[in-house]
Amino acid sequence: MFKNAEKISKAIDILIKVTDDLEKEERKDQMVNVIHDLSVAHQAVLGDLRKKDEI
Image (cartoon, rainbow, N blue to C red; front, side, top):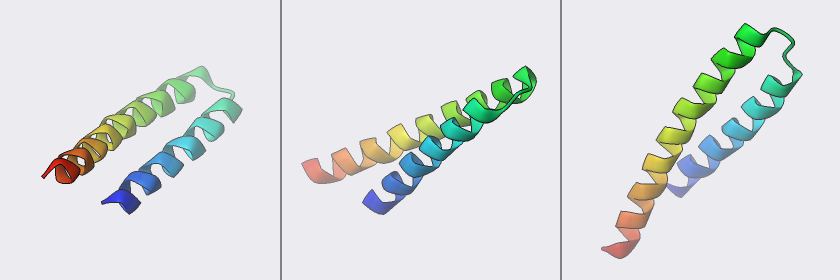
């Protein structure tokens, strides 16, 4: 599970860098939405890890 959280975190970092380099505002908005969706998934994975540690 922890490796999944790390992979998602790295993917978010890469997407942020790519988004900064984009010139079209519409594409930036689309990328921001993708990053947001990934961050929600990342939070869920981290929440699952936290619950697992509490058990």
